[in-house]
Length: 180
Image 1 (tube, rainbow, N blue to C red):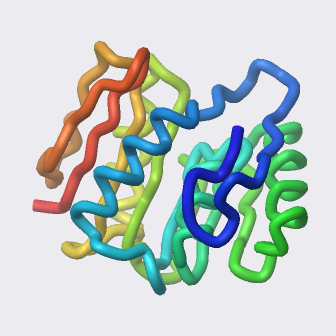
Image 2: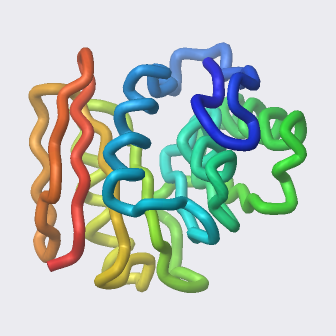
């Protein structure tokens, strides 16, 4: 696994050794960030949340491309260790906050996020459930972009959000949403 673009382009990332997390494939990440770049223009100065973060590859990619800050949410201990090692190796710890625990247990947001990246376990619906809850807790505003990665046959339907784009990449489906 490598950073696709930006300041840390080509740098290797480590993934947890257990099977509790499923790292987003490089090709899927590349497709996602291409979809986002065509809509956002730039990642400069964005406040990003990488939820169900695993190794942190999605949030790290956003930081590499210029995001100001990223909050990482993850509950698996081995994934958190890999995430912290990745942030330290890149010198990114100062632009990152790691919250250990369930994404569904996150409380009110310190502020709304420009970009939320949700890569929940496939076939659980947890990404949609989390987005619904986080929207009620102030994590999302009308200018926020949300990405939910699911299995290719899953659908995303969250009240108050419109699907802006969907793309299948291998066994994954990327869904970009905006608040209605």
